[in-house]
Amino acid sequence: MHTHDPSWSTRLKLSLLAGGLAAALLALSGCATVDAQTTAYVGVEHPAPTLPSEVVVLRSEPLRPHVRLGEILIDASVDPAPPITEVEQKLREEAAKLGGDAVVVVYDHIQPVGAYLNGPLWARDVQTVNGRKLKGIVIKYK
Image (cartoon, rainbow, N blue to C red; front, side, top):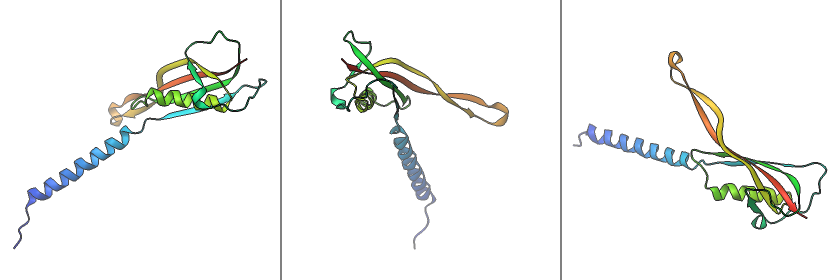
């Protein structure tokens, strides 16, 4: 006759709980995001798209003559943060859509993008949510 061992059942439940928690943490850690919003300027040329691999990401305006085609706004998570290569690739892809040869990053900061309340009604605390904001100007060389 088989007797029920309560410690075995408890260990099984705890291991399932721990496994579920680990899976949830892994799922959350893979949630790094990079979103882009691209705006073409009115009244400038609209060249054919270029290849993202040929677009250069710059940190200062080049001395070569150029035309500004538009701008890219990037919203990226910070916890977890995406690899910087992913952010730069998004800039290249969006600049290529506008026909750009380069994108000049003019703004790159981590700042509050939201907030949430934490705690019971009588002792609430406001927690801020930070995000990375980038702005790039798409240019085409003359």
